[in-house]
Picture 1 (cartoon, one colour):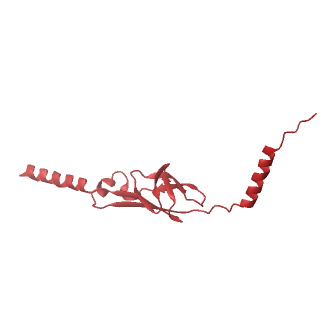
Picture 2: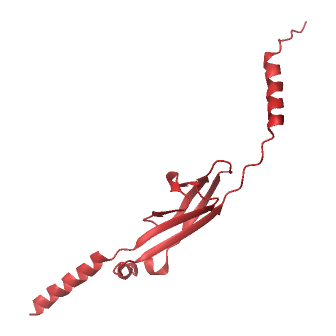
Length: 137
């Protein structure tokens, strides 16, 4: 009888350990939305987006959108207290556990390009290239 209870207890404990799993996600939003996002130099999608992650720590973040200055920065996925080693064993048993990290970024528009000045400068450069070489006596 005692052996049966022990086995039943182990089965219940194993089922509890296997049923739970912390879902870890990073959500990235931006103004304007639709920016292309890279985490640690890997393209993950366009904002707003939510991606799963495994490890806490600092991530390299890059956002790019046409008409805006690219943004290179870092995002810190901080570990919650209940996910520290030791305690996390019990947190993993909680069904539908979540650890959500949220980052929001604002992209700056590119400065206006004065096309007339740019075209004038290009013409000046073209004139220097096409000008005949002068020889000195």
